[in-house]
Image 1: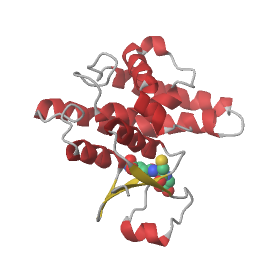
Image 2: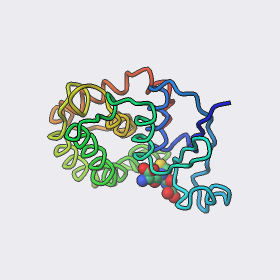
Image 3: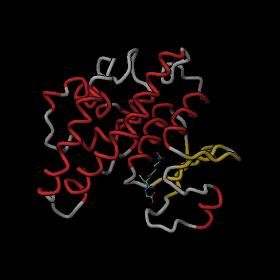
Image 4: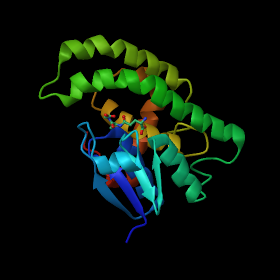
Length: 202
Ligand SMILES: N[C@@H](CCC(=O)N[C@@H](CS)C(=O)NCC(=O)O)C(=O)O
């Protein structure tokens, strides 16, 4: 029996980050689907008070917050290639991950919802939300230090944290010619066998 359980939702971008890393690490795990609707099941709230998706169980321990889980799994497996030990290299990974979650995701979802998640695209709402998204993408572009990855030295957990957004971004009409480094990261992560195995659905 797998020691790891992912509290998952197929359409959750945050859960997809973890499925990508688990596949990359070659770790077997069980999936338990959590409904998106709130209130979340009492048993889930009892083990994870904020009840956000995803969470991870490792034996008796439960860990929440997707970026925390990425950091935990890389550390658990001793993968300093994915999450560097060197403080400055690690800080760059963290900087990109935190920027992605705090600055890029809030504007990305405003485009993803009308453009991708409805029965038909809402072109007016998409157009209204696009400038803010593109503006943050252009600033994140300046943080990219790798060649086809977000950080120097190859694939890191920052790329895992970015992959679901880039998967959605690939379906959008974005000015990729102004985002050449992010376009290269997009191509790397979307073609990665571990990302394909992770089963992105939206
Ligand atoms: N900061 C959290 C965000 C988790 C999150 O918002 N998950 C979504 C699913 S992608 C969710 O649970 N949304 C509905 C809700 O929180 O009620 C993380 O990175 O794990």
